[in-house]
Length: 85
Image (cartoon, rainbow, N blue to C red):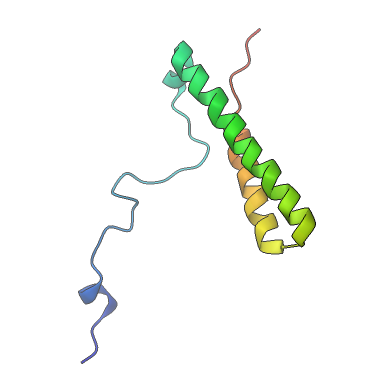
């Protein structure tokens, strides 16, 4: 007996019902010292990951990893800490 995909595999495909976006940062985060601290560390972590991946890409020549590396640089650029005058 074959079942339809929907009959045997019922669950939420929307990341737990909360959606998923890239580059959308709540502006309220940048209004507190703790929020700015979190944004800075997120940026540093994402940039470090992207740079490490870039080194592996250069050593391995993996096009798939290059694609993920470009994606990670995009994520890091979206979390740049706010600039102050």
